[in-house]
Length: 394
Image (cartoon, rainbow, N blue to C red; front, top):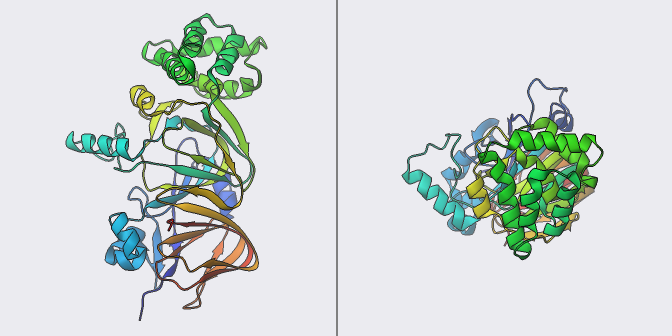
């Protein structure tokens, strides 16, 4: 008898300080508030927090299920391309407080960093580890309700004008740097000049000046509310002023944003589904108790002021090597097609069932997920609600 190819998943919650006591619990229909802040629900086979699949009533770690027969689970093509590993990771983010200002490396930088830390003997669980994985980390977020984001640079002249409205003498050098050397050079020099205040021990004084400027109602225009929020949470960190450097976006439910490697960003508030390459490589510039590596951030960030494109529901046009994403409304039934390779379906709303006619369908409620192995017949989702469908591009 062939092994089941559509399986219910058990997924793990990660508790970080920036998580929410309400968002994820309410999405899953659990009591709120929760005792600890719940930040991320991981849906995948990454070893840091692997899901399990339910096989004949018994939970089996997904990476173990895949390792039993990678060709059967992933398909021979995907197994060969990605070394027998599931190449993508799905998360539900529940952002109760701003995340760190961060950037993710591309494949080449991730591979170099991983190999260097392996050779240096840095344990994977070491808080100072920057590159726990040898893969880059493109990611896409899709809002589950309003989702607040800082992502991508504003033009350097705009940033300089916002900083000048604060009338803080210590920022004159940052503004001068922003106005030199064109767009890329100005952004690079301006960000470096701002973040240098951390190394020089001037972060607390600078943030105190920002707070006083906001209290005088001489703030940086539309950035004032975000500046005040970040300064309250991180009174010693000059990275609060990245609120003036980055574009603020409010994504509505179903809207997506692709965050390519090299994009400086910070998620501020709300719930979203995130799909990414299966990598935990994150380089942080500030607003965190975790390790900060300004030099690595400056070497990784892509310095241009092009706005990130908002993506709308249906089949999102982004096709990273490791994943693509679609969002489907279901009113009675919808087909996912006969897709080769591994797939994960996440219920975003309603009550649904996922099946291919070869066994009992997997029933899903909001926040639950199903694994679809390679070789399934045409998969259908029945019921009423909405799903996110993640797979490997052809």
